[in-house]
Length: 263
Image (cartoon, rainbow, N blue to C red; front, top):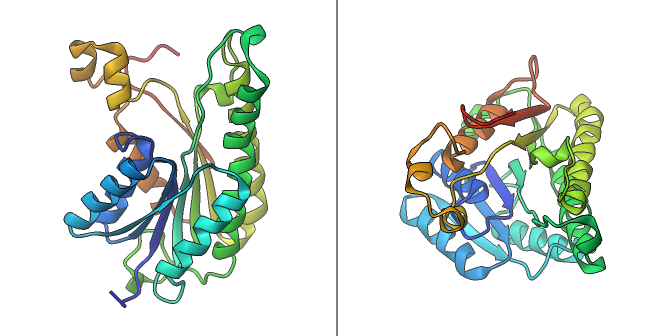
């Protein structure tokens, strides 16, 4: 396809049943070209094939890790597949994460390093590649078919967690990484908002219904009750809402939780 269409990039899709994959499917349905960056080529290819079979245009860009070099290499491949002249980058979601929940004295050097590398170092590298693209963009035009509006050059969204604003007894390593993402997102929102680039942070306050969490809980009542768990498709819709906001009223931070979540 050679027509101009906006590009959606996401880093981190896990096993294809969570927030990253749901967001990719939604934006693919809306006409965005989709670039998927993640570990685990099997799940990556599955999500890309699903989007393509449903009439979208997606391509997988597998990485072995989220080091800056791997992220830079992935973006180079993205640009070879989706040139800026026909696929201007308009939406990017950093959804990669490393879950570590342990008492402090049980956390290893490798685990704290992995948390900081995945959450902080990787988000810096991802943001740099995205913002280098956004700053070259003109404001979005209607003929692209995107949802950002005529006063926006692009939207960068970070998936956060409750641990981004509150530590707990077993979250010291996880919270350190998520606090870092939140601080980065706020700094970027203030720096790049003046260039009509929208940066937002999403606090996910609750458990998302994914294949992994279904297996952990083994609780049919929990699965069927939409008031007690987050749905990745609903999170994706909230991300779309952020993209659709115009520059007269932008959100930096949202928190998302099911109706019956204790908070």
